[in-house]
Amino acid sequence: MAFHKRNEFGTVENELAEVAKALSHPARIAILGELARRQACICGEIVEVLTLAHSTVSQHLKELLDAGLIQGTVEGPKSCYCINYEAFERFEALFKTFFAQPGSFTCC
Amino acid sequence: MAFHKRNEFGTVENELAEVAKALSHPARIAILGELARRQACICGEIVEVLTLAHSTVSQHLKELLDAGLIQGTVEGPKSCYCINYEAFERFEALFKTFFAQPGSFTCC
DNA sequence: TTTATTTATCGCAAAGATACGATAAAGCAA
DNA sequence: TTGCTTTATCGTATCTTTGCGATAAATAAA
Image (tube, rainbow over all chains, first blue to last red; front, side, top):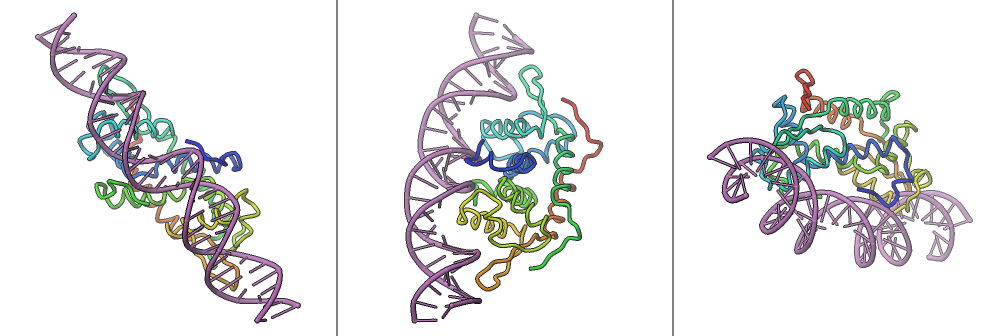
């Protein structure tokens, strides 16, 4: 997960882009939505909801984990995931600060 | 810009993912930051700020345009861009609604 | 008109993402 | 132990993204 020229950009830019990339696939949005809806950790139930192979779902879960948007623990043979709301709040705060609108100027 | 299985997901999921995808590259974040900072439309000044070829910057601008995050008008030989704050607000609203935290439950 | 300036687009090479089946790992039940 | 369930990882085919140089288009100045 690296761009040729990632070093050319600032820390904030990279962090925002990284979270956005994790959110940039409808399947991952759907997974997050499911986790938010159930308010509880689920494991392979996600596979039933989505029309994807379990290997694909595992891959998406790993990306969400790597981005810090979800947390997971292993419970016996099952895995349990839930949303990391702190990461979401951090993203929203960064987002708001970065795109602070000094009047929402629009000229075009 | 299409996924094999895009149709499997809902409208909201696809819309959120599409905007997130536009935001998923540090160069595009940097461009948006520049547009927000200057509060005015700029054209090729972006090329000077970023360490990218102008063809690459044009490409990024096109993606931001297609996602509706910026607006642009041609002014003679120059092009003028600015942030579309309505799109940003729409994204933030969608985001908040979709990830409505009924108590920010975390179990892992 | 010619020339310079600015931007957009085309074509390509390299890198990355997506999805799947097959396989492996880890725990539980019998 | 053996078998079952659940999840993670590997390998691979296909498609997408990224970045650049070269080219084209469109306007302004000379």
